[in-house]
Every structure is written in structure tokens, then in C-alpha cells.
Length: 421
View: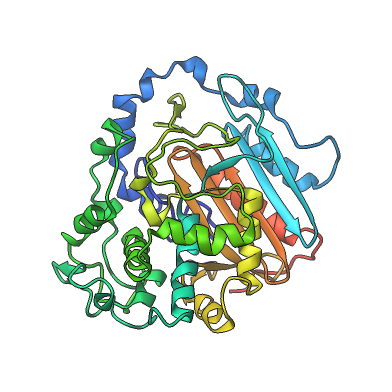
């Protein structure tokens, strides 16, 4: 996770299917072998006609209106769906009472249906701020102690091969400083490929991770681990008696009126208007439709579905203190460096990145088969969320242009200054 001097939307993903190269992220390395298997098991079975070349996509590119508003953003979206090779893209931006959703490209490479502004999509690791919010609400209610050991709430669960829940705190789970191995590093890719609709139990995925030694002694370093959020979801269920999804719906989704946001259980469908999700198994391989996926593969680490407008609303409410008391919000925003050269830092389910205009962006990114997304907000009420319906298999240019789109949206109308480092 040390590539890029800018906000990297692909840096932390729920899962990955791409081959390993010098620019790969931790999640891409975790399931690097899956790419080759996709190509063998199904990628080459897709007809070349199902793919959308850059010139075809350019011909199908659409935007939400015919005005000349936001020309830099429109140019970036056009590039994402032509030169960068993504089928479709959108960015939802909000500043106070005013907002817009810009789109480009197609939602379906067969029908060439345009990307819709009200599209829903899998948000991958952008689920983590929702989970962290619920845990911190429980902290505020006195039902969870942030610096208590995991063992207090999940006795005997984190044990073996040097992993010890008696020495790992809830804070360390949420901040990725626990040292607990990431289960994605050990998930056999052929299992996912042979049955993408299979149900996974979070406890089994945790056991898979804990069969290996920790990456480091808890609290001594930082390394992104999806396993920590599986445990956070189990913690929510143990403390409340309800599944983590039920608590997210009750505590976050319903109070904020997030009508396009859901926490699926075993359902592989995305209800409501949505683009097809695609993966590209190899550099010159045709696109593979991977829209149907059982989200238990990700669980509390990355299973949710949302829209650009809804995720913006969530981030705005979070930063404005509508979901957490000041003490808990302060803890969430107490960050530690992650080692990235841009000065990026991670709090509790929320990461910060300096913007070119001198402000600080707070948000998260996500990647799950079919969709790459990133969302961020500033403390003064600006939000932006971008999505491309291609993951994995997008180029570094796709990643960089998504980064630039979010930065541009958040800095629009403000003078640029050197990033804070």
C-alpha cells in the first residue's frame, strides 16, 4: 500500500482478482492468483463482442445533462470511460444544499444502456466506516470499551499461532494495528471462482486467518486487515444480540433516510437501478460480468450496497456529529500514519488524505468484484463519491483518474496549494 503520492481509490479493496506487479496493492496481492484462474475458468468464455472498446464507449458516453458545468470533472469521467477503459463511471458531488451527479459511459456493455445518476453499486471496503460507527455508538452507550481486549467480548475467538485476543484491543481492530492476518491472503481463489454465490461464515474466515501468525505484535505497526472488521461485526452481534447489518440499518441507514443503501445477507442481487459489474481477467482479455456475487465473501469488511448520493449523505452526517457524540467522533478521527508518502493516515474506519487545495479529505475507498469506488468529504460540508463498474482489471490510469475526480470535486472553486504532508 505504498504506491501513489495521491489519494488512491484502489489502495484498499475488499477483495482482488488481479495479477501481481510492481504497483499492486495488498488486496491485489492477496488474491493475485485469482486472475489467472478467472481467465481459465470463465474469462475467455466471454465473447469478444461483450467487451466495450474505448471508441465504442466514447460513442456511448453520456452525461447527466447538456450543460457545461464542471468541465474538469466531465473530462475526467470521459477519460475514465474511453482512454482508461472503464465501461461506465459516475461521480456524485455535494456542497451544502447544492449537488449533482455526473455520469459517463455505459451500465451494460451488451445493451449499451447509459450509466444512471441514481445507480446503486457494491461499495466494498467503504462498508468499514459504517461498521466502525456502530461500534463507536456502542462505546458511547457504555456497552463497549474501546481499549478493552477483544477477549472480553469474543472469548476464545482470537487464539492460535501467536494471535491472542487478550492482547489486542477493539481500537486496534478498527485501526488496523492489531497485526491479525488478513483472511484474503489465504482464501483459495479457485473456491470463489467455482462458486461465486457460495455462502461464507465470518467465523470460518476468521479461523482461516488465525491459522497463520500475526503480521506484527499488536499496536506496534499498521497493516490493513479485513479480518479485523469481521471480528468487529461479530462483536456487534455479541453485544447487541443482532446481526451487524440489522444494527447498521437501525442506527445509520434509517435515521439518515439512506433509501439506496442496504446491507445484504446472502442475496446476490443488487436491487434497484444499477450498472452491471465487470472484471477484466487479463490485459487484453474481454470483460467478464461478475455482477452476481454472494456478499458474505466480504461480510462486515465490505458487503454493503449504496449510491454516490447516499454515501455522501452518510459522510456529511458523520463529520457533522449527527451519528457520534463528540468524544467518539474525536476517537474516530485520531489517525496514525499508514506509511504513504502523501501523508495519508487512518483513524477508526475512516482515513484522511491531504487535498491539493490545502484541505483535508475524510473518507474511504473500496473495491469488490465488479466495482471500484471512493468517497471523501471535508469538514466544511463538501462531499464527492466516484465509481467505475470495472474491478479488478482496471489500469493504473483508472485508479489515478478516480483519485483526481474526487480531489477535483472537493477542491472545485478553491485555489490550489501544495498538499499538506
